[in-house]
Length: 283
Image (cartoon, rainbow, N blue to C red; front, side, top):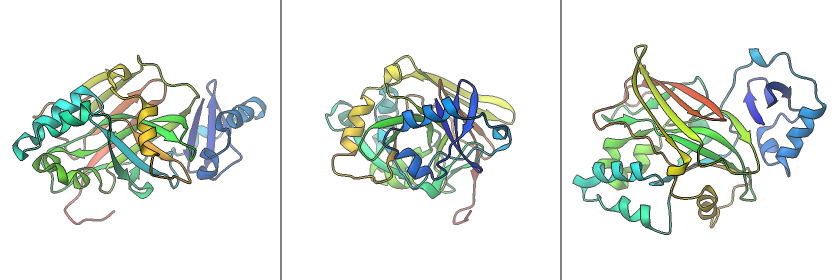
């Protein structure tokens, strides 16, 4: 089943029908002792909501932090080795790919996250920007994976490639992260055959498309969560992006006005328009 955060409260979807969730506070909802059982009871006893079609779906986040894992797909490893080669960091990513400890980094605060239909940004001081489609985990305060959503880890490849120490500037800025459209709540892991698809539209035409599956993910989600929770506590839970296996060619960069669509079955599609603001602009 799926749970949505909207401008009109929270809803659970089951069997194609939507039911209003009595718990309106998102943090309280996702930290529920047994979220799946709670949602199942609402769907089993509630009356389908007639107003869901008119609500605005928002990013499924309250006060949770968003973290990310890097170099978890071989394709990402190769791309990041190439972009950092001239800076002397070409083999850093190969070492991380084969190391026991994964690369984990802080990605976003809730205020920087874009929801479905909201714009994502490319930096005004970057010349090579790409989206990174990623399966994203929702983890409760006890370190348990309770759901999955679609994530877009926007990245400035030229800034990171100039020096790997610039990773925070390449990854963390206003609306550099998008989540949605919902949380797929399930107790068992998604199968390795789960597809991830990326489509980038420019001026009404397809500019780039690519696909991969979770079979290409080198590290198990539970392993990544274990490292994230080793020395961190998350009272409201946390999101963890698991890395990307789709990398556009080096000749490609996002432009203002592009539309990015990321689809992960059976979660859904996250779509965002790309905007570029002048350096120093706010909003």
